[in-house]
Length: 190
Image (cartoon, rainbow, N blue to C red; front, top):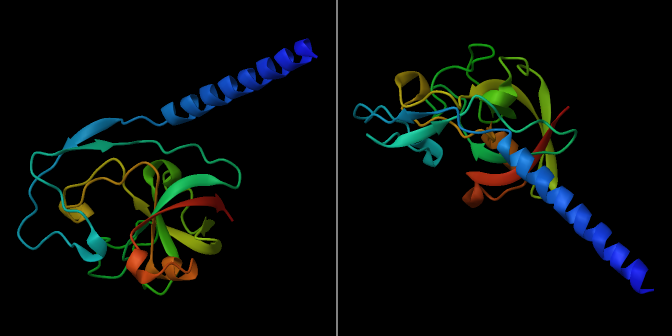
């Protein structure tokens, strides 16, 4: 009996150790690719709709060329709020089609690595969060490599793991408007 108990403990310990190594390797797959020094936006040029952050002069922001690997049906991400409408905090027109999109349309921008050089343009993804799911079309890149300039509405680069979503996505996930902004979700290609 003692021998089988010791074997069970050894197997459990080995599995736990292997899982820890896998998680550490996963976390190391996407490291910062550089730093970007913030510049003070011209007066009135940084749109703070949806609590968007404006670049701070002299502050350094990490940039990323990668995103975590897309894993089957459950890729972890941070859902953020963005306006894709003209004059909204998303800046210029969407990168995929050169158009603006209504806040009432379920659309998203993906961090640079997931956007994959426009390969996900006009593809639907499924987002799961708050106990609900929604399909949304990829129309833009949440640029993780550049920022703090006019093209990026004087906002810092996106993080490597963002799904920037319209209000329609947040409504479909049944998140109360007072809690819109940041939420852990999972997503998959539809």
